[in-house]
Image (cartoon, rainbow, N blue to C red; front, side):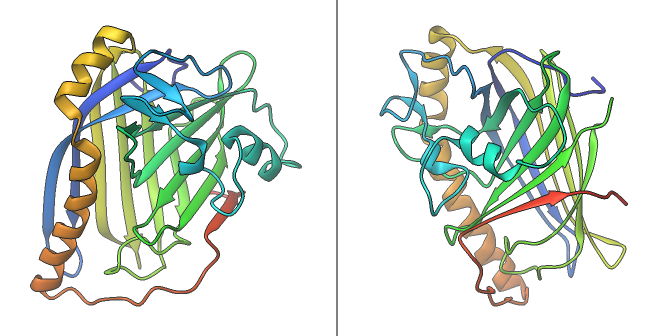
Length: 255
């Protein structure tokens, strides 16, 4: 697995790991399942719907622009107007709503050309203050690594500085996402997700519902629990800067 393939709808189940290196070591991990599916030609299942209540659902209001509601694809089209490239199909890796509850710390969109070759990647980051930042980069042939300057307040224990070094690989059987956060040439934090795939169909969706029905609640609670642990370990609290609810950054240069 050494590239970003065009893959049909999947459920990826695996382990998320977080490790902080500065100013002290702190790590944790948990099981989680992400959905991978098409936006342009969204396939509706009995148990997985778009903008409708279901066991699992994808609501456009949970993604893209916060201030103005609408289809995520339309928002991307507006933001990428003037950017050269063939962005024909969009696939997304995200946590679905489960019984109408959702929180997505990170979603990844891959834009493909008409030949189903990756042409762009969008990293969508949410914080717990209902703010969102999207980072876009073109994808060169065979590229799986991306650099994004940090322009968004995510953790209350990290300043808004430094940059992310991101690796992403996807195929029919596996997914690997690795994020390394660098401050002053030092690795401050890393997160990874490794998962194995299942085909997305009604039977697997039903099975998955019974095993992950509380997943999104656990993700939200876990963020606050880990924040408390960092606080009691002595991590310095960084005040949140005032920004617009949604920011979109187009990355033109790489380090």
